[in-house]
Amino acid sequence: MMSMETIPAKTGFTTDLAGQAVAGLVPRLRRAAGAAALAVVVLLPNVAAVQARGPEAIADTAERVMDAVVNIKANQRQAQRSVPMPQMPPGSPFEDLFNDFFNRRGPGGPGAPGPQPNQRASSLGSGFVIDAGGTVVTNNHVIAEANEITVVFNDGTELKAEVVGKDAKTDIAVLKVKSDKPLKFVKFGDSEKLRIGEWVIAIGNPFGFGGSVSAGIVSAKQRNIRSGPYDSFIQTDAAINKGNSGGPLFNLEGDVVGINTAIISPSGGSIGIGFSVPASIAVPVIDQLKEFGETRRGWLGVAIQDVDDDTADALKLGRARGAMVINVDDKGPAKSAGLEREDVIIRFDGKDIRRSNDLPRIVAQTPIGKEVDVTVWRGGKEVAKRVTLGRLDETPQKASVQTREPQNNTSSAPVLGLDVTPVTADLRRRYNIKDGVDGVVVTRVDPNSVAAERRISVGDVIVEVQREAVRSAADIRKRLDTLKAQGQRRALFYVATGPEGTLRYVTLPIN
Image 1: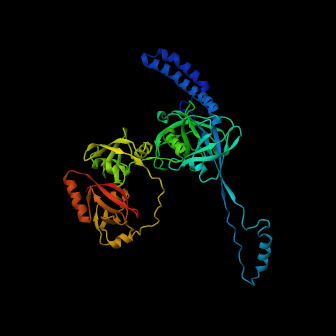
Image 2: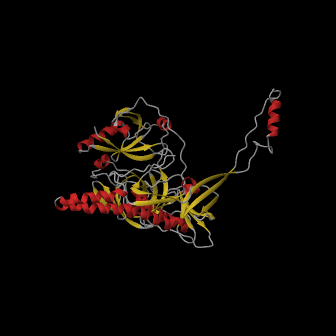
Image 3: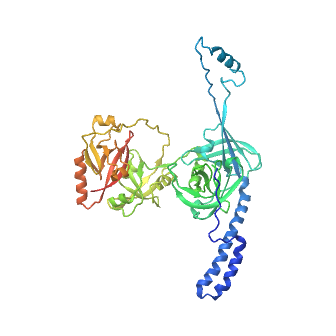
């Protein structure tokens, strides 16, 4: 396993030499003129003080919170399938040999390949206690489908745990243990106040070594690693390894600011890129799991996508921001509030939407039934709407296993590097196009075109160009000519993909 390498400071000064180095500079600085020299004299001792205070605070904090951090042992019984005995043809010269071997080693014999007792599949992780009554928080993936969970405390005490609730989308689980004495616990802090470069501490059970402490800094905030719809991770270089999952990330005040969840590593060990679910996301989920045993999230009823620079230019938005609406659920709150396709949601309930992944997280954390103000960009100006949120249906949806057959059609007509042709019954079957999706089907993509860069593929259906339905290549050319005459440099193509007819906008330059 790869271990995290300690990089020396670029100054080259060790702690012991720092005082001597500063002392040696003072006579020279006294001879220097003006406030600049004075500023340097003041700065160096302050840096040394910060460096000295960091490690001391880490030790004090770790000592205070260690007993609230636990190890999680999760077991799942799995039935082992029996190994079939080979059958030799009657009269085979090896028949007696095999019969003798498997009669001796068959059911009941040593090394029997017959039915075996259930086996245990185990996983190890970390967690932490959040109240004196025994509520424990960990990752959902640590306990998975376990039917036996044990919480191991720092003093070696082991308590059986019951699952209160779990949420796969944020990878959070809440457990409950019963203890005959009050338990040491920790509280959550405000992860929104974390600063990049701030010291943090991870404590957990890496590779089965319980009660391990590692320290580092906040490397970044609001990281989207595409693990779920509500990604906004804290990135840290504090060592996080297998077994740290579900453990707490502390600030130097001893408050939990994150739940350690994932790492990026080619070896399985820490390379200084770890991710924690921030407390601002975790706490509402934990509260709901404690109260209801499940999550109850707000629902707006729109499908969205990112707004890039080209799309912002096509919509005269000025700069890339917000979440672009690509579809509105006919039964959702957004529909009754008057939201439309191609609206860009730039503000929701008083919060600016900088990127599309901001919106699902904010909506999910908003109380069901709350009436909120929504600002959208439409037709070159801001439009205000009010939406009453519904409740998100989190029932898992079955994915289609159908695939498209990537065949070309020689009757296609080219436009913007795409060969397109009207959707026919034959093409609908060939490319597995969803019923109700109409337009022109893409039968060839020039690999050197912008359309290829934007991931338009054979079998995709172009439904509209800049809010106008198209049914032929001539329709597309006519629409592009009109937009070009209006001074447009780019056009929004509304594209349906796959057997589910997933819709998205693709911005292409007008030639």
